[in-house]
Image (cartoon, rainbow over all chains, first blue to last red):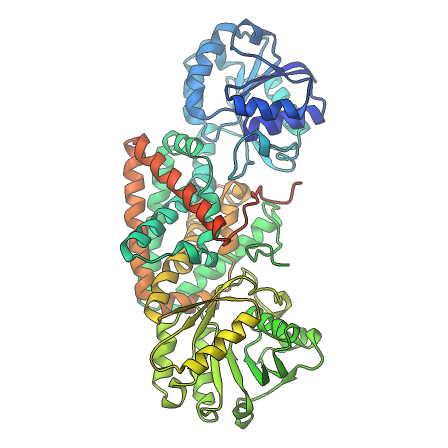
Length: 301
Length: 301
């Protein structure tokens, strides 16, 4: 499909793309730009043919596809270097979780506006680093490709083919819709998980009781989400702050409503909320966004 | 260990106790009181020797151990029936998730005050019904036994032995501490999960966008918790309302703080919260309240 692809930033996502690309024979040569020595050590174990570049320089002009897989806070510097060497021959994409801020960054560079097509594979984990990467990470998962009038049909098609080849299902979206939707399906849930752990820590301090010890009753499951990479999530919270703040406000409004219903022991209304949740769970399973197998916590069976 | 035990209410928890009791040969005879025909159908498949009682009547006076495993909203009626037939020969316990309200109920009955020792095994799932029960559900899990001056050392010992035999690790606590601790480790997390799904439904209606479709980015994990049994959770929310409302208030206070930090792009403070969460996750794994195996969503490997 390609002669040369370059993966910039090779952690969990970058190394999963790397693995999938090797497995699906997507490119003759695969180049990696990665600063962490520890990460390079793991990446070298994946395949001996992987080539490393030490600098973003004239070499990048030969890359058919350049994929940014770093934290979003690093984009600015990378884009600054890239724009000196890329031309209409190159195609660039990325994997970041917020899109309007990146779009803005690209649009400042005339050179990049046409050739940078943003994408966001909806896949990940609470762990990070190339040692956890997996070639099947994107299989049957959504990948959002950001479409707007600046992007040619030909380039969009190329990116679409790439993601499809490594297993993703494609949805085209604009950056406004993207940032709105993921503020509620991803950014708010993570923030809520972090906030719950913060509240448990505060409670523990205030009441001088060990609550973490009894986390198996629910807290535990949130702690997994709240163990996600802090740089990644800081970047997301800052990068999509207006939508996230709107989501928090909706969430607080509903919490206050919940409180009132509990105080009043409003049986019918509470049951309605709880039953509706179950219906959503059913939809999520039907849409294959999760498995139906029940969770009992630690492996007991 | 016993001649006769009676399990009242045989859903996920009751049938797991049943299975564990058979496996550990805890009693010569095991009796079940269960109203649902569908449940009885599943329970009969577990073991042919299980005996069913159709009414709470004079038979219960022969039971060495009576275990209430129904929803808490059914306790009042069951206790009303039980008190007519039990005496100091019997020992009663339960599995409910809130304790002060049950303690109050018991203390109204002089007959029960001495012989009813409350307990709370910290185990469960989002699924309910005896078809999901498992003999290992309590293995290495905490079981809280509620201790106060009314309970004799002998009876406490007996209940402790019972739970230990089916695999639990024992902690003694008073009902005030219990309800405070579990409001934060279990009741708040469940409420938050329900509230998140409610917020996602509201968002979907308001913005006319399908968000459930993209739930794999975080929402999915909360939907599992929010699929828990609605009667059980209504009873918990109403039964421990004052502690839960305190927890919600702490949670909202932290959310507002989070919002301010995001607005101000307060890098240092945000990173501190996110990093502290990771530490808590580490503790939870060290305390064996969860497994360290990372989650990538649906089985992909």
